[in-house]
Length: 507
Image (cartoon, rainbow, N blue to C red; front, side, top):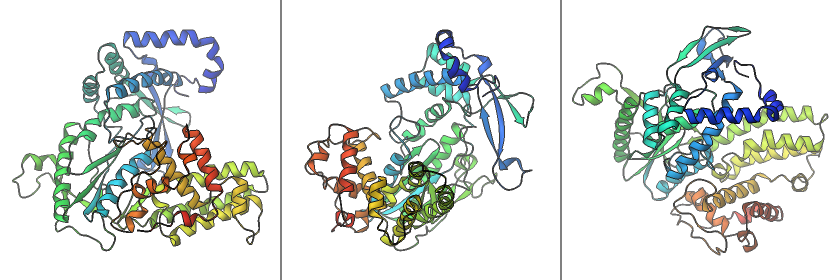
């Protein structure tokens, strides 16, 4: 609960008694264009992360707002998103906090550009931006101007102005509260509307015309480059960084140049640029003919061989070895929990825990890394078999496939096929990301598959998704709904004896 000490549990209990008066208050707030000042105060609780306990930066501030304020915000958020989606305001390159879009859609968009560039034998790179305290440094006046440009005017504009201004917070340590301090920048932390207001704030950045192709999930932004030469890539990246600096300066945000990195994707060798990539400060952009930076604000953007983007570890060779090692390490920690719980919990409970702690980690992004070579994948598959044997007290010599079938758990490669086809179905039917190439999948006997110039491209989602979809029986393709489609797909996969035959792609 927030400073009013009213919990969500209490609100649910008294809902029948207060629903009429609450509806009146919310409607009155919207009609008057005023957000209640009593709901603008937040309690900030510092939560320890790691290392030295006497260093402030080692604590994460958690903002607690009134549960009542979130009711107001949820209703306004629904109205706001409905209006902005109707007007087509949001950039197609922004995947964050939008209906039917998630991080996997953003990853699909980014990696499609990378795989397509490599398949065309072009020089391909990725630039990964890191914004300093993005949500906390939003300028209220600029945000309000952008709301006005988006079509939010009149009483609704006044409501948002009231919502953003004259907000206060105090810090709580144990049971002690600090003095109140006014919040003059940033979207309200811990709020319902904060994330939507932020993507409105950076929407014009996502719409900007860069040399590279931009992919953004809220503040996690990356640009992909496919050019004829590495010199062209370097030139394009430098020009884009200059444009980004102009935008950041105008909008009072700052790029963390130390954490901003780029990767040159190449399957055979480590590519180095002839000159370093420089992120110029605002002073140097205003005075392009100066030989040296007087403010010492310019910095070199570092090159890296691997980077974590939206929860997936990318490397320059795209062999997914680093990501698979990361999953393997996380699952090793969970194995001990299952050994401890198997004597205390029934099989049904253990299965629920498996989906929560194991499958959730395995299936995230598997449509990308699930096509890695057999040696790398085998480590995860062995762990998967280890888990189901722990859950069922099965011996090592006992075949695993019947156990997978009985528990209704898909083995690793089957899960890969399921996830690839599921995401492709969602994209083509418009239930996932916005896609310019939506296709009707019902009654589609054969879909076009991109031509692979290399064996490497056959491991990409852009190739393997339509290729696998063409393998489906028509009874599955002609399903009348997504729910029926997925049920039939899972049943079909459970009846396949050898998944390697299905995945045997001849170039």
